[in-house]
Amino acid sequence: MITLTTDNFEEQVLRSDKPILVDFWAEWCGPCRMVAPVLEQIEAEHGLTIGKLNTDENPEIMARYGVMGIPTLILFENGEPAKQVVGAKPKRMLVSELGLA
Image 1 (cartoon, helix red, strand yellow):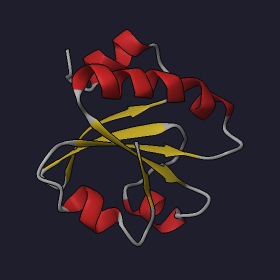
Image 2 (cartoon, helix red, strand yellow; image 1 turned 180 degrees about the vertical axis):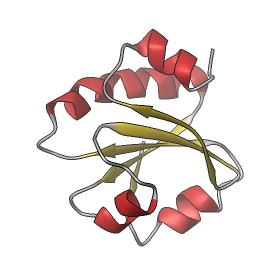
Image 3 (cartoon, helix red, strand yellow; image 1 turned 90 degrees about the vertical axis):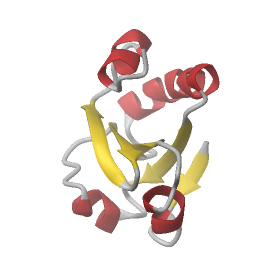
């Protein structure tokens, strides 16, 4: 997993030639902590790059993509949001909703 910030978001996400899943999270968010190990499994099993963006430290990116609640997962393809999942969900549901199955 890579740590995303306002400074590296464009380079790491918008200019990426591979799909990248951005996890919008915060330290204080219990459901964010619950979904983190599931994302690690998805990253390992599907070869998907996952970037974590702390919303408390990078509110402008959160606002840019209309993220209202966390955790929010947005799958970017060719620099554009392709799929979005809001809330902590079981692995099988995340894989399905993100189109990884």
